[in-house]
Image (cartoon, rainbow, N blue to C red):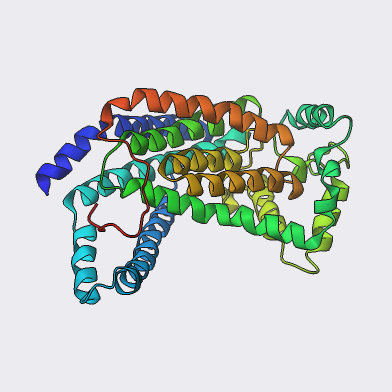
Length: 356
């Protein structure tokens, strides 16, 4: 185990370096703004990731057992299942990769919690009006939400996009779980983890600070006028039929912005990191499975539309996200190409042995 862990740590050294760099940046930013490393939030995130590991493992176990019993018609499905299950979760390479992957993700999450909350402190919101005007230019003189009014005015559609927006977190956990605990330390695995960190640092901090903005849902609260009040009124109306959790979250974030002591992960509209990460999920999964790739691209499209319908983002926030994600993905793939062992495409097949 020690040998495998040492080898995995050496392979992950550049990912560790990126995470360490983010921690050092966060320490410097925190010293300037008074923000501290929020280890409690990261501990919760780590707990969610381990919970995802357990849930995905249990779900996969059920499917695997049914496959052995009903498809392969194994004469002793329970024995075959137990054997493959033990090999799967007792794989030293998988555990070594998982330990390193978890360390990278948790260290980076710790750092970004500080950076996100510092954006509005270091660079007060100044771009909302310009982004709103850019939206109107792209939508031929009207706000994009007005072009999507058929969805905004349909309470069931609002609830659907609201659910998809919240489901993003579970897709995040599932994708991180898959990449972190992969047995084979392939180019794709390193590319995803590196691109994930690069995208959040470049887009979620540096670009977000350069184009500091709050988003349509806060337009009136910033004293910029009532351009988005019809949208917010429509969302409030939808809550009479379905819970629109976005509204409560927006209120909580605003309270955190007004009183940082109340706790807040920060407000930032441009670029949309929900859309950026949804695109990263799609870029990752399309390399593992054509079907999974198609589903995650559909999901990313829903996040883009939902970000407008729910008042979180201007349309240009999503466009900006795409312009950041794609170069980060290419750069990460080029930089970590040396780690390739073999092409990784099939990924999540049920039939073959779990030990693969």
